[in-house]
Amino acid sequence: MEMKIDILSTQPIKPSSPTPNHLRSFKISLLDQLAPPFYVPVILLFSADDFDCEAVDHVTICDLLKRSLSQTLSRFYPLAGKLKGNDSVDCSDDGAVFMEARANVELSEILRDPEIDLLQKLLPCEPYSVGSESSDRAITAIQATIFECGGIGIGVCMSHKVADGATLATFLTAWSATAMGTDDGITPFLDSASLFPPRDINTVLSSGVISHGKTLTRRFLFDAASLARLQSKASNSTRVEAVTSLIWKSAMDVAREKSGKDTISSIVTHVVNLRGKTEPPLSDRSLGNLWQQAVATVTEQEGKVELDDLVGRLRRAIKKVDKEYVKEIQGEEGLSKACGAMKEVQKMIMSKGEMELYRFSSWSRFPFYETDFGFGRPIWVCTITAPIKNVIILMDTKSGGGIEAWVTMVEEDMTKFQRHYELLEFVSSTQSA
Image (cartoon, rainbow, N blue to C red; front, side, top):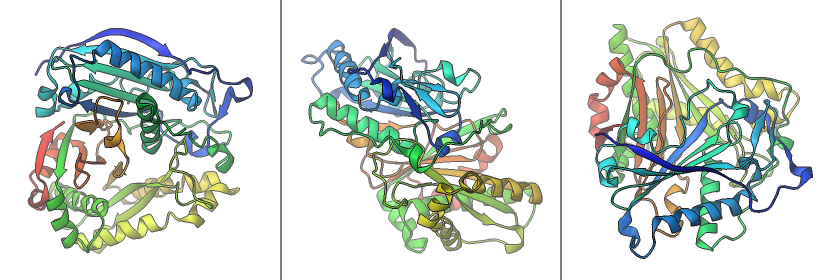
């Protein structure tokens, strides 16, 4: 399908109230410093069936979005600034970039065949381009796209140096509540740097992280019924544990067949939210990269492992990221501890050689589907995965009972993975993305 996007306007949206001088330099935390130089992308699609296009024209809708965005940025003021080096944000109210666009297709065409190339056009920028200097780029960029049917797409890109998926969800909750006039004063916690003090470091993206070869992304849907069966088979695990372990096992089977060996070694990393693991617990509305990676492994010497075993390994790895773990990050050796997971992974890969790494991140339970700007809740919320092999992002379905797994692999591996017998036993549908 050919889709053309016409950009009608681009403008900065500044906070409605100027940021006070004493807040103009916003320190980012150690965990922000270690975050990759990407954007965190999300796309929310709203059907015209949920609002009266005749009564509410799109000019009015865009004006509402811009006005409420300006008001929201006055509380989330770092999101309207620009990065300054690798330790702070210049909060001079440069503003968030807001683009108005029009698509020459109907929303139903996107939903019918959601290809990555099409979804990318609904975002205001390329999230994983690291060629330009980060200091020249806005921290927040938004694109509001009007479809021929009257439906609306809102694509948001937020700098990963300032925000994670939870931050993005909190911001959308606050923005939509402001647009609806139901805002209860949602204000983020903006002092993560006091809990995880920044260091004099300058991170560089490791070579080879961005895949230069051909990768494919597929979206695997697990509905509530198939998830219940999977959870029952996988030691009554949580939804995220069950899907992660099934994908891990299927991917290992593909890698084993490819290598021609009876057994192989592999690593899984899984992002763990730290907000509930500090003492006292942080608010869900805390801004920043408040996460660490749990690491679970299977070594060649252990032989072939079953689903139950993988669930156990994953669960034990995640439990290690506890309050004591967080205290160590906050201590004098915090930098070493914060980098420990990836150093461990690199050490294992160097010592083992042929060892596949699978990176998981779960956005399950983030309230994206509750976002309502006054024209209904989203009919679909999605992201696009990084052009990095073996990256998996898990998102809720609209019903909340299912999970969509966005899986990126090299083309050869994906061809075999998407046909894996055990995966197909539980997947409700598979789509290109």
